[in-house]
Length: 214
Image 1 (cartoon, rainbow, N blue to C red):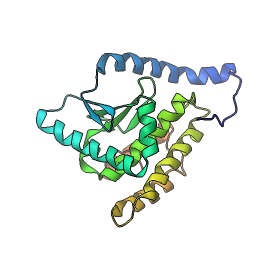
Image 2 (cartoon, helix red, strand yellow):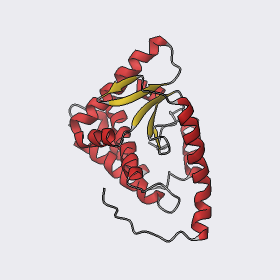
Image 3 (cartoon, rainbow, N blue to C red):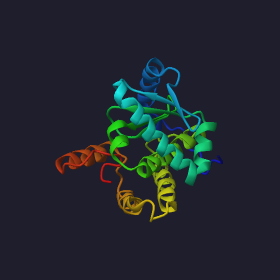
């Protein structure tokens, strides 16, 4: 990927702002190396790890994830090829939100959302996080001074995938894309706005998905 952002000199203030993120990456790497072994399954050539789920839940979760990856490969084959090329792995986790862990090169998918939402929405989340993975592998990490541009780029990729789905076959995709586009106009990627969005979703009885307001 060609770098489109200008390089900035690492001033002391910028390095200080990045210090918490560097510590988080280090902890993530240490925990990930301990918890993630060889992939337990595969979806379109991607290694898949599952958390400590009962045997009765493992096969349905793998099937749902495989359906989402197959849908992504059908409408965005280049995105899946990039995931394979970058060595990205998939993790089905109990809690949290769908997100990319750059230190371990893993996309974590939340099991409750995977089981409940349509495969088209899960595939769009994989498209979003796959864009994060591609940028990270190109050396563009979501530092505080770059995160707004990084998130806009990833949301643009996700919207492009959702808009490419045939409306007749995936009736909810267009409405989800509209809500996502509206949510992307606000800086929901900051820690404060994420917490506010999750609290608002819980008050309204909605799932605290990512982005929180979608």
